[in-house]
Structures are given as C-alpha cells and as structure tokens.
Image (cartoon, rainbow, N blue to C red):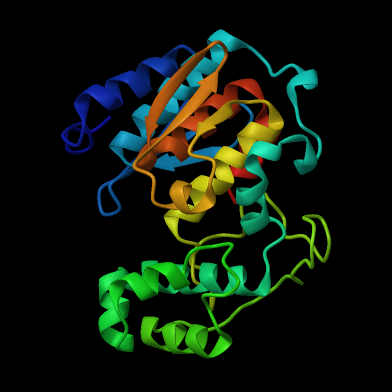
Length: 264
C-alpha cells in the first residue's frame, strides 16, 4: 500500500485491507483519476466504486452475511408474482413503444447532463409539458413527432430494441431484466442512473434478496432520493446514489447469481 493511495481515504483502505487479510475479498487498488476502488469477491467478481459506493457495498455485504443465503421459497419466479412492481416491470421488461422512446430520451438527457428545464428551452415547450411527456405509462402525452423533436434536442439517437406489448405485461418480446452490456460501448448511450436503480431494486425484489417497500411507481422511483428496502425483518432507507452498490453487496453475500445480474 503506497502513501499516495492511502491519502485518498485511509479509513476505507484500512477496512479493505483488513477484509483482505481476513480472506473476505481481494483489494486490487485505487484509481486516482477515476476516484474508484476495485475489489474482487471470493467468487471472482470485480466491484469498482467510489468511496461512498464502496462503503455501501461493504455494509450490504455485511448485512447479507448476517441474513444468510436466500431461501429459494422467497424468490418470485415470474413478474406476475410481484404485482406491486407491475408499473416498474412494464418499463423495464415489457415497455410500450412510447415508453421505450421516453427511456431513450432520458438516457440522452443524462448523457448530456440535461434536465427538463434545459430540454424545454431547446424545444420551445414549457418545463411542465416536457415532464408530463416523459412520464412513463401515459400513452396520450407523447407523439412520435414530439419524441423525435426531444431526442434531437437532447443530442441522442434512437435504439429501440424490443417489440412493445399490446395489453397485458408479458405480451410481445420481453427485454432482459439483468443489467445490459458494458456502459460506454461504442454507439450505445448508457442507461440513465434512475433506470439502473429501478433495475437493481426489481432484480433483488424478484430474487428474494431484498423487498422494495417504496417507491414502487416507476416515475417516482426514477427520481427518488432514497428507497425504503426490507432485508430480513427490518426496513432500511437507502440513499439513491448508493442503492446499487448496497444491493450488490447484499446479493454478493446472499445470492451470487443475482449479484452477477446486477452488473454487466
């Protein structure tokens, strides 16, 4: 361990080195330029987070260790077994064409660092009109012409992949719920953080790793500042910016297959 590396976060590095000495993980080092710490789990998966994310991963892993492996009976093997997540799963797994457009526009906005006010200024619409048009689930508020205008204003392009369902969830060609390929792949705009969080809480909920208590409505979950999640008996409020590493740590300890699905 170098002095330069330790200067970043001595307490975190000490904790990681202690865990390595105890045989709980392998500490691979700190990337100063990216401000990320990298570890390798016992089953060979690398986790790379900033300081807050790595602490969250460790807290999730420790809680998962206390709870023990997931009881297979707790898993919901089909989205129909989790009606509380119907709205979220419609966006992630069986999106309508309109909702696919909304997700793609949100991704382009996130990539450019734009918010609804910025997009409103670029399209000549009101901020409220933009926010309403981008709400998942409302088929009447986003025409294809408006979607095209918003996408051009956000500087993105279309990459609609999945056949929309017509009627009940489960119809049409479903999208995979597991994390997509590596963010930043050539020609692919990474999904916005809000969608990644929705994907993580849904995967863990269905697998029985942890139960999402709130918010379960997709538009609320997308912009939520925190999530209430029940793991074991207790419900915890987890800040949105660290919910993915926290859940990944929990899954690393309780259900490695779900942990692998959380990260590309």
